[in-house]
Image (cartoon, rainbow, N blue to C red; front, side):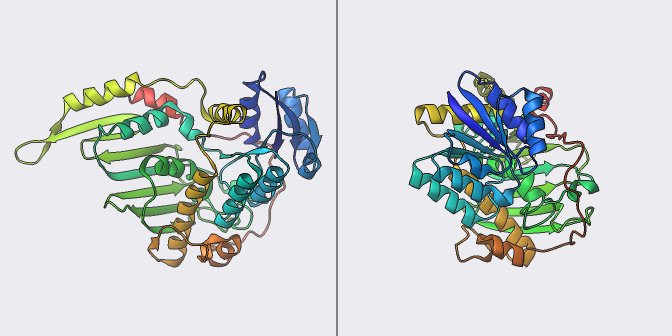
Length: 390
């Protein structure tokens, strides 16, 4: 029975708790920590946990904890993760992995030195549309990928950034590019690999209580000539997201949609119904996931701890995602076309460099400690939309 601790009792912690509770025969949540102990206590009472409540996570470093979920604001991810890794615990970190590439490297070094695993939450991988899309692309049926498109559309009200740690480069680390599009950027890298160049723009058009962007648009160039684009936003009503790949032979996406074309004699398109049927059959024959989202990833992490197998999303993946995000911020802040990979000498490698060089749109003049309503939305359901578009 693995002993689990939850560090941070904010809204996202519920997804971790419900995930662990699905595997009560394999693990037990023995501690919940938050700098506001009443939030931790409420979490314990809500889910009927038999768990210790603490205010300072350091109290747990001397206890036998097998796995820790880090659900705090990003600016303390590295400190908490490294301390628990050094204390002998495995670590599962909420997105983003950390607030700088330097911190990601320090986390990964601590994991390697202590022989422990690090996984970074990328729950969108653990959905049928994403997992199946990955397999379809790997099959080569769609052909060489010519263009990739990420639409990470979210909507947040003005008061969203009133919370004390949100809307600041120092504590949140960035806006929707970092904290919302991170999942689709992870999936893009998983499926298409790292681009070689990034050119980006960002703005804050609706949240004058935040230093950070509320929309960014990035253009990507790959070494093989393919292009991509990523839109990250908290100003889009409807909260729809999609990941689209235009292949030489067919267009495929999550939510699942399939179109294939062949050329008429005059160059205009007509449907390639034979290829569409072939790809659709391949897609339909792929296995369905047993567990989804956070629960699916928690199952993957528990299995890795139990068996020594590799996790699907590791610390290197988490770092790669943050690297592309930092390249977007660098390009949008400086106007430069940014080459990847970013080097340790780059100003956007460290938190201090980001604070100094990233564009500050507004300055927070006031804040609140907590919201009374901690319920959250997770965007339009990929699973539902996959069936409607199937």
